[in-house]
Image 1 (tube, rainbow, N blue to C red):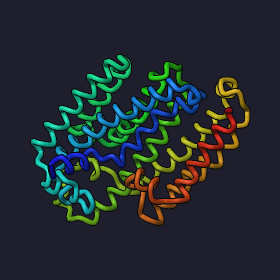
Image 2: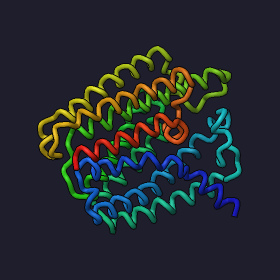
Image 3: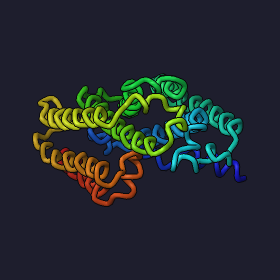
Length: 293
């Protein structure tokens, strides 16, 4: 029974919140008023969460030796050896196969995208996480694939702008995550971190520059999105610019938490623990929906 509990913990249910990107096309297309599309998006969210949870387990198995020396990750079931690698891998593969079978019967396009996601993340765990910049590109691509899944499920054509904004925002979060990881790694002895080669290739000044660039480009892309004539025509409103201040506040708040509170390594923790940030997201969604209704 304990193995099952530790296995469930290793699926990291708290991080499944990242999969809400699947609902983005549903909201931005007004299809959230259609029961069938809401239902299909929710089913896709659950099935893809099983996939991402299993990938987390496989990644934890690859990173076991590194996680043992990390101040927080050392308490994870696999790193602390409360859950054996053999049991974890077997369970993860079983869930992936089961989830893919259900996804194939649900939507073949969803199946193809999920397969691409799995292959990319396995390659990431095995090697690509050690390639500077490309490691964050892979993470960002994962979020773009989530949005594409959301569009495929409700059968709509996605605006290129929503994919660009998603990619840049994910890059922003990814570089901040690397920055905070690097700070923590610098507190460890140099010879203790042999499994995360890529972090040694970054430095704080370089990451700060990348964060500055992605901050600016994300904001510019979102502003371009809400001012795009085709988007305004599709959503039947020219007032989406009222949502811009909430996006600016959200990004600036995240930067504040990163640089003054030493947070930002885990976006899901920020969402669950920082009330101003959480309220800002809720208000932004409410205002956006109000403007397009």
